Length: 267
Image 1 (cartoon, rainbow, N blue to C red):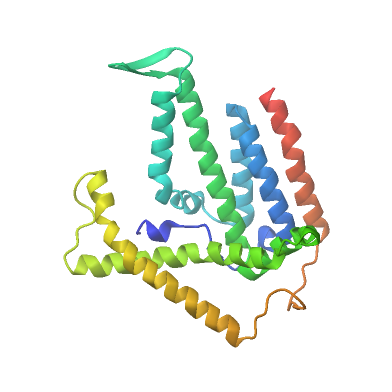
Image 2 (cartoon, rainbow, N blue to C red; image 1 turned 90 degrees about the horizontal axis):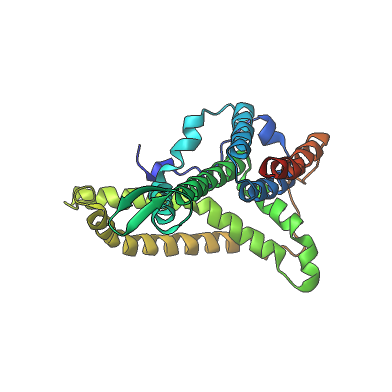
């Protein structure tokens, strides 16, 4: 499977699992507290606790762990770069390895490992949100949570719409990139041989047709919205109204309870 098809953020899988039935607002609130928890944790036990939570959520969704791990493939280089930066430029602790004037010390290894774990957890939990929430429902939830900001002139509906469209177009653009790459490979382009820098340079010819395709898609979307008389959020009605159930309050309570539990692990 191509790296582009490995993207899980922005994709939606229809279903009837516990996560699918949760209100989108409660999932967004839980996501915020989970992100806070990821940055609060700095111990192995804390990250093990977060890993158990993600595993339990996967059981509710009936998805294999390999599916989410596959979504990490596009950020492998970012993870490696993050680890290398901390290994060679974060000092402290005992010296583990020495290469000339550069040293790898225990504190750099410790921080690099935790930073990579943070990237992994952030991508996995965000993927769980988009996999179980339709773009329309996600837009309504973001708009509802940003509602109080309208009093100070913030266009909540427009911001929510832009965020959701951007999120939804991630897998679409990745698929378009793959099509362009295959078309250029059929004409003799080489994207796989050479070192990392040469392969990165070979991807430059993809940018122009990808930008052209993106602008074309954006224009088609704008025309489609105009044809359906879209005029923003003012006076707009919804086919399905968001309704909270007891399970939603339970999910929010559990996510809030994460913070004191993880602070305990930290202490």
